[in-house]
Image (cartoon, rainbow, N blue to C red):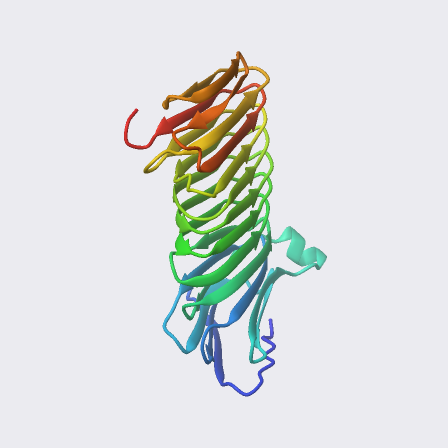
Length: 280
């Protein structure tokens, strides 16, 4: 399939070559850039990986089945756009085949990934902000100090070591956050558990909402927050002593220490646990 390039001012190199098995074609696109950029990745039924790179370069590698996918890479001086899309012909729809792309961008860049039935992995790096929208395939984000938004359906979301505001909405899929700190946190799913390990900071708010599944919060560091937890059918427990306690069999409200942060937890037909990350 042809590769279309639309370049303005800055140089690029794009190479396509056989991978050696006769059925896949390799991707190798390189753009010279000045400073951080914004990258937009659109993909269908593929694997997308994003990672930091050296300053001054965007490097895109991967491979496709050329009978089933088309590939596009373009740079207009501000935004790098990458497309890895399934062909819509009848022949392409009935054929098997896979595709994967790995993009490496300069530190401080921002990213937007819009994908269908596509697994997304973002490695630790210095990003300005990130947005992921996908379905039917897992999302994995490792590290980073930036604002992150995830929209997903029917596949798990796993985030580790991220610092900054976090906004996750998914359906019928588990969400696991480990080592989070800094910024507001809002996580919503249904029919699947939420597990959060991280800080509840002064002035910060954490809101976790699901249905028909449990919620587990493991607090890292000092605990000073108000708690507002409710379920329709399940137990609620707290590792911490609660001041100004209001409790029913399915609700728990009150203050831990000075109540500097906020923790709101909601589920149905599931238990809620608030633990210390240091002690069981």
